[in-house]
Length: 200
Image (cartoon, rainbow, N blue to C red):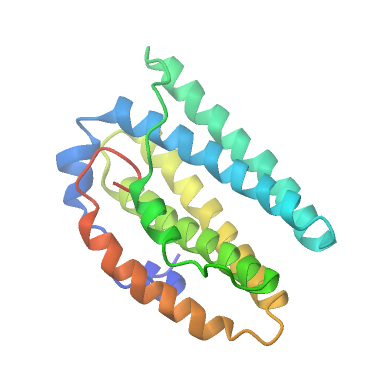
């Protein structure tokens, strides 16, 4: 995979010291947070189905995504159990909540769909970038291999959401809206990368 900045267009890379200083000493916390990230990704796909049952291509792709995200959830949970941990309580994802503030309020159904798809693409892009940093910098071989595999998976999800946004955009300028989202995310992410969570 080439530079995540080229592929994903993210403007601010994660400092690899996040892995060394925070992730490696808080594995249980990271795994719990990651498990809930996968569950929320599945919930998001279900919501897209519920809100857009007439868009058959979207419904088919989201149905597959729900299965994949819940498989990832179970795999993370399996690692948690293997290590003698238990799944902790769900954490609030402040990063995602901040991104949601950028979504169109009270727009047309089409605008709301495009924004939801772009929001989903953004979350997948940042998750992909974080997994890449983890896979390259964590000393734990099992987790390094696992996060490399998931990095590739998240890149595919990012591409899928961007493609769907373009497909259903109509006369909405998706490229401009995506650039605006990227600019906004670059501001938001400056406050993160300091906590024991995937987006924190």
